[in-house]
Amino acid sequence: MDSSSSSSAAGLGAVDPQLQHFIEVETQKQRFQQLVHQMTELCWGVIAGRRQCLTTLTSTMV
Image 1: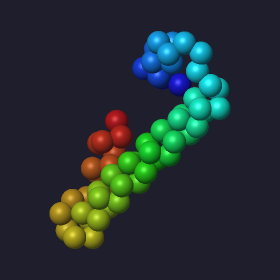
Image 2: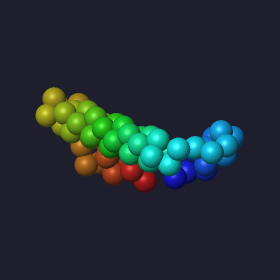
Image 3: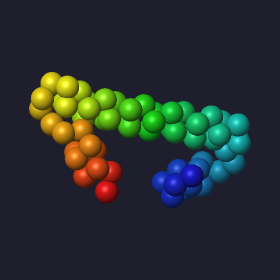
Image 4: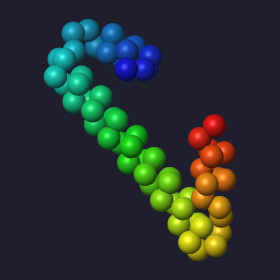
């Protein structure tokens, strides 16, 4: 859990652990979907001749 979710959880008082776990899992799913979307866009650029996937991906991951 990152500091922003810790601080928001602390501001709410007692948070249901199951709800907190559900939110964390859904947040991780969203982050994964965003990453897949970004990688798909970058690699599609190679197919369309717009960009080089590995070069661009490497520079964005650093």
